[in-house]
Length: 367
Ligand code: NAD
Image 1 (cartoon, rainbow, N blue to C red):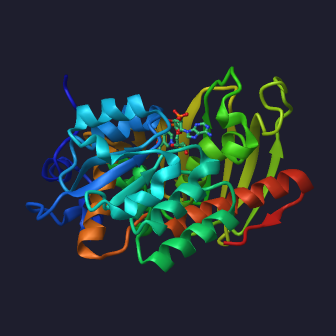
Image 2: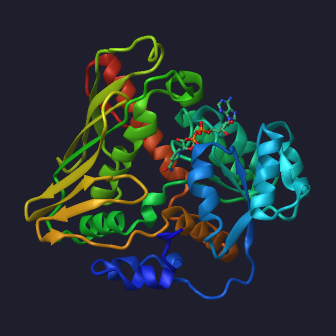
């Protein structure tokens, strides 16, 4: 089966533009033979672990899968067989503290429902392991604070699974925002949704923290901050769409319209829902624009155009680059470009959006 992962050398080599910008990220260019492959344990063996992270961990250079935390022992045994680690490295959610005694595991990657991220990240930190946590980082800013504090106290690194920082199209968006080829991006828009027809954990407030804004809207929020050169909006306005299926969306929104207002006057209008299909983002400045026409925030298949013409990059295996980058941060004791603080920032924006949807007023973002 053809795998679209490209090595870091060819990934960099195939970039037609934005290469200079990429080279400013030292840990993406620090190649060489790894001294040691760090051991990773995945917590939660659902769709994302199975479809993306497991396969990515067969491609990584600086880390490899050495254990799992799962509620399903048989599934863990299958993973142990597939990835060649001992069954003694299979843990349950209740035995995560025992990871502390396992030198095979250096990094714990939390891939459970959002509402469980805080407890699993804190358990991993207490076991002395470096942690990657999936997006959204948690249900609330308060949980993010507790996670950051626990990792600091344990002296371990914390990173969020923001894989798009390792995607060449999004890196080009960040470069354009920084170098201002098209001027400052003042007008942005994003639309992301998929149709959800059954009540799964993503529509359960306790486990998901909210509806599509937590799961999908966070990408638009993050993309808009990239287009704003890493700056967060100062305020937001928002309105929840009327529910067409209140049985499924009994305690979370089915969809949300919102606008992010930035200090320099830039705005991003956005829509997300679990009742329509979309994956789009556009940023416009006085001198040009960039438009993610299809698969804006997905793993591959992005169609991206600019006012100067289309962009064409060979898609890397985002998750492999992301995990290798974190492993290098651990090995070299450097900071992740996607630290816990970035996940916390996005939760602060989400909390302001929910507040604005409730109040019907413009609400300040407290990042
Ligand atoms: P999933 O439902 O497929 O998997 C969730 C896993 O958590 C399952 O193995 C399940 O058994 C386990 N789990 C443990 N306790 C549970 C509980 N009380 N209720 C339900 N499940 C429980 O979900 P997923 O799509 O793999 O998403 C997991 C996390 O990864 C979420 O935070 C999601 O936002 C994130 N995610 C990120 C990306 C990305 O591109 N970065 C993509 C998909 C999912």
